[in-house]
Amino acid sequence: MAYPANYRYTNQHEWVQVKGDVATIGITDYAQHELGDVVFVELPKPGNKVTAGKSFGTVESVKAVSDIYSPVTGEVTEANGDLQNAPEKINSDPHGAAWLIKVRLSNPAEVNSLMDAKAYEAFIATKGKEASA
Amino acid sequence: MESVNSPTVCQIRKTPLNALHHRLAAKMVNFGGWDMPVEYPSTGGLVAEHKAVRGSVGVFDVSHMGDIRIHSGRNPGGALAAVQHITMNDASRLAIGQAHYSAMLYPQGTFVDDVIVHRLGADDFLLVINAGTREKDIDWVRENTKSFDCVVEDLSDSYTQLAIQGPRAIDVLQKLTDADLASVKNYWFTHGTVCELKNRLIARTGYTGEDGFEIYVPSDTSTGNEVWRKVMDAGREFGILPCGLGARNTLRLEAKMALYGHEISETVSVWEAGLERYCKMDKGEFIGRTALERAKAVEQSRTLVGLEMMDRGIARDDYRCYDETGHAIGIITSGSPSPTLGKNIALAYVPPAMSAIGTAIYVEIRERKYKSQVVPTPFYKRARKVAPQPVASSSAKTV
Image 1 (cartoon, chains in turn green, blue):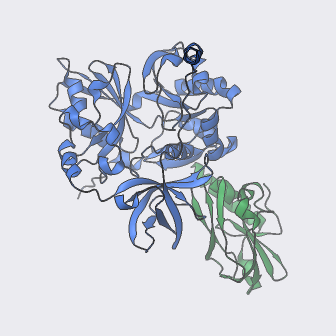
Image 2: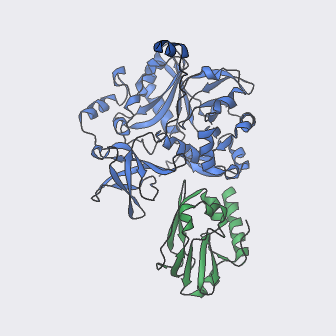
Image 3: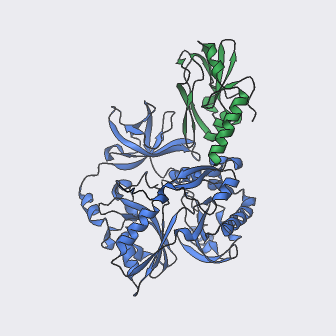
């Protein structure tokens, strides 16, 4: 799956797309693949604060629980309610319909320190090598 | 000081099919020191594998399991006496060609390991043991059978062991063997030609709560690969899938089969684990019997129960359990979503007073408490084939 060029990425495998002062956050295709069949998602409610680098929720597959770390700091404006009944969307469309939350940014400059698609692809390529070594 | 760490403990071990799993792009994990497949994402992954076994057929590489053969020394009878001494079930009741679930116990009545005992001959037994406890088990068996007139052989590295599981397992394997599989009853075994390999052990056993077979073939890589390929070819028409440890765990959990280090361990007794059905106190002396006898007279402090989550949350291994008033009462031993039931299920140790069906138990998940309730187990039981009604006799009754 291609990594959208207009997204930024974390080394914890979240993506963020910024439009104005609102960021949409999700997990990457690499992350969903590592997790396997996603069966449960726990997300913060609108109004909650999230902090860059801190966990804001969890995604669970049959066999594992994974924390999701916020790429940015701000206030949650929306959580993707569709995922409650259809968590498997995270496996099928992680970069699109299965976005997790939207956040009003308190420090938009934070995004600049994140990886772009090219850097992220290089990053996960080294992961693949570690795994097969 | 000299290091006491054995180098074998640090080195990851591989089954003869390891390279095959990597070729199939399986997600691999270190399981008790073994590099094993968790799931095969390219053919559907864990849930698809689980459903294949419940609905049709799947195949598992279980070559990491250990095998110990105990047979006669100078005089017959020594092997049976040794097996009776080191295991809790009554091996004297096994017919030749029959197997049963059993366990090796410490003197305090807790578990060294659980085992499947196969009676190969009048005084010849094969014990199939867990991968993670192999060395410990073999040392234990050698140490505790010393005074018996028997020979103990570690055959763990002699076999590639495949588990073909599911309602269509019999149809798949029957294509590959001359043995009449329909005549092999559950927990019995036979020997036959499998994939042109003569005199192979074929057991109607498994760890999935489903019908199925486990086959033992020589452990060289080319034989293993060849048998695997033939099983996959024979299973193609039934949609056979390679299955990993992930599905193996969800399948065994639904069937409430114990996993060493979880439901049973060196600190859990037979009574607590609810495995009294397999512990034959009347068979005579065996290691652990005296302690179990004593423990019977004392009130048990905990018992294993099945839980179903009522709140939206997934109980996982080692999560803590609480009663309604917030008192810590126990611990989850295994917990997972159940692909068959579409519910979140778990096994937990709780006080006997909290074990009645319907009792509310709260599971702590990430610092919040989620409601669950005690439910009957096993969570899943396969439908046994019902014998067709004898038409003649039933019509005779109505006349």
